[in-house]
Image (cartoon, rainbow, N blue to C red; front, side, top):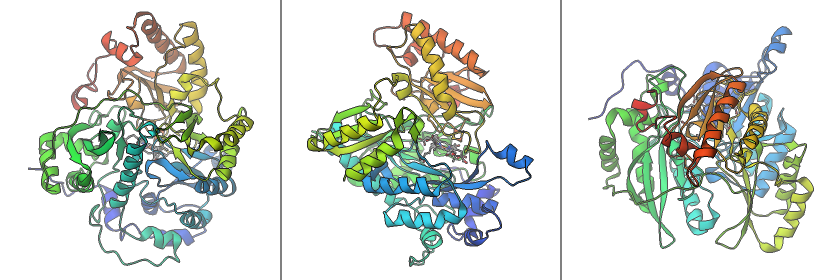
Length: 566
Ligand code: SRM
Ligand code: SF4
């Protein structure tokens, strides 16, 4: 019934197979102080332990001129299902970022966790030990495994939210690698039991990365359609009863390679809560067994699903999980962005959402964000929540504690009412200088670009309405730009492809509008389209919907067929 794999597996497959469950010869590389990095194979394996080998691309030329090898450092990404981190943990990781990294900042990610860039190899073990002491780790935040699980931040439906968040932890724990390599390599003194097999992921692990999110309608902050598995919460009488399941979302492409396409996940069926773990396991093992292990660019679940058809995939889930999937319950989304500022949850606590430009926690001239958060972490005995929009929420604030927080907010200017709505809704990926795959600037380009765009918008009278704009420095699309209303994808330094036609709710993939454009041409094109929108839109019609209704772009309905058609 299913396709099977060919024998000419990709190099990564051999590497995983011969790694002794993710050990390789990492231990030798940790000790070798002749180089600041890991050999190629080990640099791939350390990803499964949540680390990437990088070098600062701004410094490359200068170091080459001086005949120095690149300054190799490590980026570490923590595991944080649903983005919850206690204030005490934040205090400690802030200290780590300040004292033990070259960049002195924390980067919040689009998958609700944080990264520390610029760690020297000599400091890695000490860092993992500190993380371990505060009950954090970086297991499986990268590599061919299930990555950090997202969960909608939704205090307005607090009981359902807490339930969903606890499911994000249960699913994450269930699908975690069983190998003890992480503890052995980085925590050393921890005793480990001998594990010979990975019962769920398999000893060769998955063909490619795997992503899961939980959404609580009507909030789609997690961009549920971009995940390999999406769990959409179904509530009855305010009680979580189960999930609608969607499968096979993913956003990356390779420029000019029509074999690759972004795709929104397909609906599969409804499951009750007690079926969640076995259905997760069924889906991930189908992908494990039938995903493409020859071509990594066509290895994500969406390509497996499109090859075998939704109906066969569904039958296989039912067989493996030993259940019958019911029809999906009706649901809809109407919101993706965070509401910045104070919000009252239906548990009567207060929640303060602080906008973090590009997810970069650093002290800005007009906002001492890093110091302000550190001060809050000292007095707040509850948690912070990193949102899928790269912002941070101070959670569970009692009314009596509000004044103390207000005073810190004021002193460090953590809430700035002058920040424009466009900036608050926009996202950019990390890109230069640390990302080795970057083709154009993203994070460093976003704000100067928006400053120019906003002047044009003001002139065109578009300033009251907002458009969701996202920039990725390459077609991997880490800012989930392939689900935005205006999507910029880096092609080369200063040049971007512009895609339009995504919608406000994040349920439609955009399509190529202009290719290889510089900043001036992009501003001109957006100015024209947004002017037409503001003058001709129907009441409350979002930009992306207007673009499709007026046929500036034909909608993407079936990605594999019409993403590239004109
Ligand atoms: Fe990503 C690779 C950063 C979310 C698709 N991503 C990378 C690397 C690790 C580059 C590399 O392989 O060496 C980037 C590190 C840059 C740096 O210096 O920090 C990187 N990705 C990020 C983050 C930090 C972007 C951000 O600004 O927040 C996000 C970290 C998420 C996390 O905490 O786990 C991040 N990446 C995403 C997303 C969005 C999402 O998952 O919701 C996507 C698109 C969704 C998807 O997976 O389809 C995404 N990243 C990729 C891909 C393409 C994967 C594919 O299927 O082909 C790569 C390249 C790869 O894996 O080969 C990639
Ligand atoms: Fe790097 Fe490309 Fe991801 Fe941006 S989209 S962080 S440039 S891999």
